[in-house]
Image 1 (cartoon, rainbow, N blue to C red):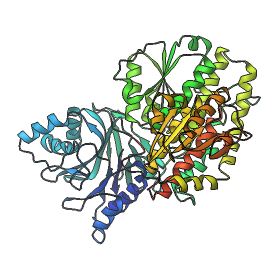
Image 2 (cartoon, helix red, strand yellow):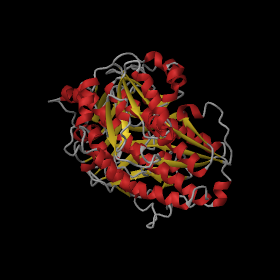
Image 3 (cartoon, helix red, strand yellow):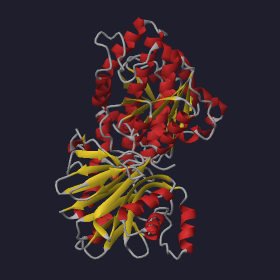
Image 4 (tube, rainbow, N blue to C red):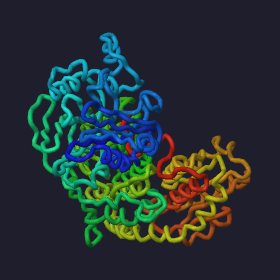
Length: 609
């Protein structure tokens, strides 16, 4: 969940480190720090809190030097504090290190190092690396780092610097992302491309187990055995403006409004011109392959998991293959029944979600075929899966995911329709009907975004309630889960989503006078049942905000307020109903004065279990 930057070159390191960390703030963090070699020593400056606190601390006394590393930390081992912030150094200040991930055997290593006289000043697992490097140092920085890496277990992105080799940085990764930016008389290291995009578009993307030695005018990459690896240059084809707010007050609002473009891009080139079929050249599946699949697992976390729930519905209804949807952090600990007749689909916006990556690896170990759905080209999950379908949402900066979710829904729809076409489990006429409907979704989302004043009003009216309930049936329930998550994430309102039919099994005890209930009622097959459930909560004097399709004249008889979305096929309408729920969460957060883009305790890319 952290940000890493590194610089070595002819220029000053500190300005780049601070600039790069600023561009990585979206990843979520609780402290920040930099280390710069000043010609005599490695000067480390760090501070708990926002990056602005670190900038204040060093204002007028910025470290001077042309080699440095920086970090924004999200606490895993030890509370947020100045002492626990990165970078960390050894006893004598000869080495400094920044780290994303977890060193699983750090306690064993730490106890051994303490026995040898090393003095630790933090509670972190990361500090072990600096002391371990000090302990094994043999006069050769590179070979000593190799020794360290051979002794540690866990997941990591690491950058080391040494006072004894001041013009050199050494980095490596395992399960966490790391890129090297190629400059002229200078080179850069970062955990994500936005940190370096203002300096270079030419990058090396490191793979697991690779070690890179980075100097201002040379870079060489090897494996753990020291064997050289030839890297291809990856040219970044998106611009710095893509990571800016574009005139919107927050990244989240910008990204909500980018959904028509994102969905349109994700559909692009994947629909036959005559609407007869879905075209997924990435897969090239055939009837024999799909007939051999007797079970599908969809595995993901958070918002991606909610997209997976909709995906389960799509695949079972359209392709008639049994699907289980699993939370990634639980999947590998429950001894899942997986074999070579299983297809495991993992969904992750970043492609670096550590729980999802671990589940993917476990599924592969058990013999499953694997497919990744992700937004980031070259990410760990994309590289590890047998096949990958990219959502083309573009960079998503806000912690609360919006356009990633809608593009994940579109991809799950495409996969289900693709399967149905191959297996002939749906009439061709119905497939074409859904494809035509999917083409209209970007325009319909745009229409949903045109009039947000009623949503602003509801947010102001009910934004200070401490409890909100969401109800729905069928696909409406799956979308309700995502709506509740959005509200919790950024407004800190206690929000719960329930299958509407479950109300009478206990939940009605929580419905009291004035409590807001967001009721989704767009699924025609269960519409009358949903109305009955709405009547139940109204009988307890709840305030009901209904979500309905245009043309619905019935819901307003029972709801206090109704938000309408364009009429669409009930299989496609989740792509529309989620939009007002995203906006409701956004404006509720504004009403409560919350930090929309950086909700407390959360991060964009979850790289620890």
